[in-house]
Amino acid sequence: MTDDLELDAVVVGAGFSGLYALHVLRDRLGLSVRAIDRAGGVGGVWYWNRYPGARCDIESYSYSYSFSPDLQQEWRWSERFAGQPEILRYLEHVADRFDLRRDIVLDTRITSATWDDDRARWVLTTDIGDRLSARYLISGAGNLSEAATPELDGLDTFDGPVYSTARWPRGGVDFTGKRVAVIGTGSSGIQVIPHIAAQAAHLTVFQRTANYATPIGNGTLDPEFARLVKADYPNLRRRSRDNFAGLPFDLQSPSALAVSDHERSRVYQERWDQGGFRLFLDSYADLFFDEKANDTAAEFIRDRIRERVTDPATAELLCPTDHPYATKRPPLESGYYETYNRDTVELVDLRSSPIQRIIPRGIRTEGAAGTDHALDAIVLATGFDGFTGPLLRMGIRGRDGRSLREHWSDGPHTYLGLMTHGFPNLFTITGPQSPSQFYNHPLAAEDHVDWLADCISHLRERGVDRIEPSAEAEHRWGEHTDEVASGALLPRTDSWFMGSNVPGKPRALLIYLGGAPAYRRICADVAERGYQGFLFDGVPAAEGPGATV
Ligand code: NA7
Image 1: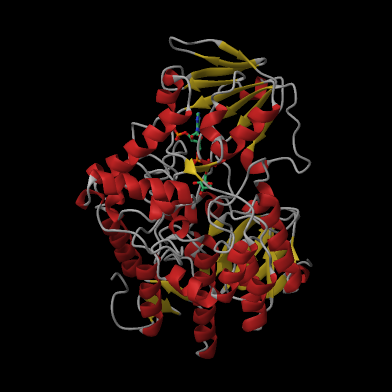
Image 2: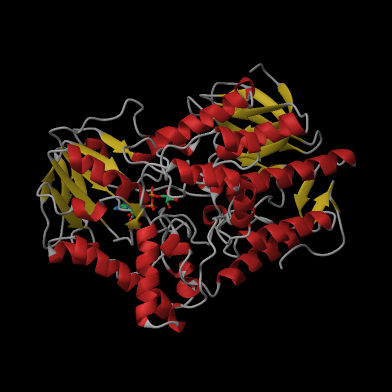
């Protein structure tokens, strides 16, 4: 990059969102664009999260771009649920196939983004001293790109290596003969634990909250199934976009309480055997709203855990009892519970034996079972500063020099999860207060990019330089987001969906729970009504306060 490069748009990130945004803005709209990523390659979260066992929990044919029928037909997935190396290869292929690499700047982090209202441009600086400006700033920085580092006393005094699942070394790690700790039993921990256990001399898992993990059901992708999918792709994508979470599921019944015990168990067992998110998203709708209904699924899963773990005391520790099923993101697993039947694997319950501190030779816990756990390596699978973290670390300052950190000091404020009052021309792909993690990511990213591309075309056709939501529209969207979630069980549980996994982060719902179809309809309506709720160059673009439902 040269100094003071003037562009139409800068895209942050080169993962699913960033690659598609670059393609659409450059090749469909004809804008001058650069995508900037701090990684050494394209792929976003799939570039960084290369720990053994890293895998997508959505079926490969579904967790992929839909925008190019040719790409859909050409690409061959080898497994039902693709592993990280294959997804990374896919994204690298997309970058090559659509000739994106020439406009991607790697190994570069945006350190500040300041809105210049006189010129109606974002002025950006990077950590390698570049300065550039753009009319539009499009964040595809992702929701899982900023690792949450736990506050563990003495971590820097540990004698051995400390790895993070979110920043796994490119060359891999050999744990042969080592005594290893994994801290964290979310999706990442549950994926990596069986792999480390198979290699290490001894593995100690430090669990704060037991999780409801269900089988992923992975395997080689049947060529006949792949052929049928390819023959029916348009219909499959249509069905997915009509589904709450962007998945081609349509078997869900309204209530787990409206059927007999026998029928309910049959359905749970069938979904359990089918694997993936079937049990979570394709059994009974009221699991998300009704505690009694939720209990039935929770108890079904606990029973399966008890069947699979030989030692009853360990099985009980692995059975979640302190939160309803699916109020934290339910992990999918392969052989996770059986891992605890190995003699070389030990489970430490941090509720009864909290970590006191990290010592040079291991981890010291307190409580009744307090002891020093001797270790050669520690693996942190402790999650992410999700949704807002990557945006807040970018040094964004909007109109009148107001920082995004200040504007979001009590949690994110957005309109549609796409734009923020006081931050003109800043679009956040799958941003906070959009369905994001509850909408199959490639489709969610495509929807947002298509929406913002249409919006930018609309602005350019009319000679409008600045777009931002009105304060009122933003306020109403926040209220609507909370109202939609008010009947759901999810906000009651501490999780990264609520921001409550990061000490000091305001507790606020970070996702829109109205489902993808309702959300897509709202976004389309806003555009059709002339961008209701938005200000064009400071003037309301259309009559009316802005969307809710
Ligand atoms: P998650 O789901 O946020 O899980 C993080 C895990 O780490 C979870 O078990 C946490 O326990 C645990 N944790 C976090 N901090 C600590 C400390 N300080 N001490 C002990 N244990 C801790 O992150 P993942 O990376 O697994 O998954 C993130 C997303 O990636 C997932 O939702 C999918 O979309 C893919 P807690 O539950 O907070 O008690």
